[in-house]
Amino acid sequence: MNARSSRLHTIFRMVKEEAQQLAQIFETVRSFKVKQKCGKGKLIFGSVTAQDLVDIIKAQLQREVGKRIVELLEIHETGEYIAELKLYPEVTVRIRLNVFAN
Image (cartoon, rainbow, N blue to C red; front, side, top):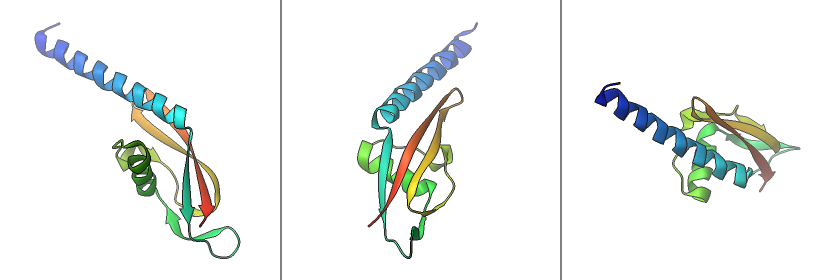
């Protein structure tokens, strides 16, 4: 193994370890709450998107994550939803998102 591939291997290992630490933080928090204006029944005004979840994570955990790693369908009703965050190819975490009426 040459020096360059050794450095790359070290960098990939560090990134994976950082992703695993972030996954532990998400597993500790387990869920995030979102308050939205509500219309009739369970319908909310607008929707909750992956970008909204990224903003919530940044506000509550002071952690930057890209919206491309978040798998979440647009949410149009109050209720409990599951989002999947792919932090690294082998590191995926599922978090609960509770959408409430404001």
